[in-house]
Amino acid sequence: MSPKFSHTAFYQELQTALPTSTFEQRKIWLANIIENNIQIKDLAQLLLCEHKIATRFQWMLSELGLLYPKKLLSELPYLLEFSKQINPAYKTSFASFWRIAGVPTENEAVAIDLLFQWLISPTTNVTTKSRSLWVLEKLTDKYPELKNELKLCLIDQMDKYSPDFKKRVNKVLEKLNQ
Image 1: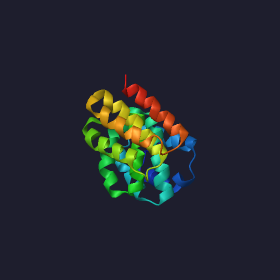
Image 2 (image 1 turned 90 degrees about the horizontal axis):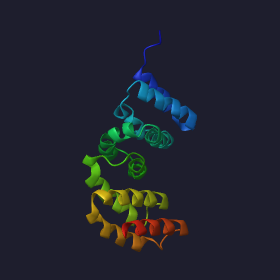
Image 3 (image 1 turned 45 degrees about the vertical axis):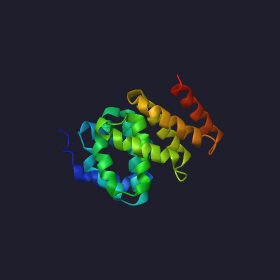
Image 4 (image 1 turned 180 degrees about the vertical axis):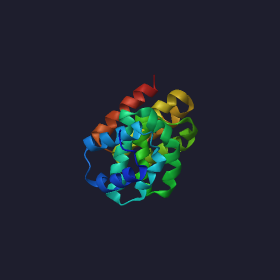
């Protein structure tokens, strides 16, 4: 007989071990989350912990999306609402989450606004800008009226950053012009 799973003990384990965790450890924790049907809202307080815990938990959420995209997608509406309580710098992780798992229908309007903000902001890093443009490009399939706005933003941003970013922008512009 296996011992009863304890949500409290699991949370405490994550809080203690996340700062020095490896991908292999996080994979085991993710399997526990799936196996024991743990809701991310029960772990979301980890985003309010010190920086290393919160950052590693964000990594774990991205890894959840890579391994179990439907699970992350189902948790994103709660996480977006919860993000009002966390360090604003952590919110850009949603560009990654949405790229990995998709944008929940109920969050599309907020997501579109945030993604455009990150894309045009001079303080947003190039990684977040790239992820934002990929998610926005995908959303133009559903909302073709976004294409012109996205094209204008990309043209404005393309020469402001690295040559790799410019290549990404050109690829997306090609797709948008088809």
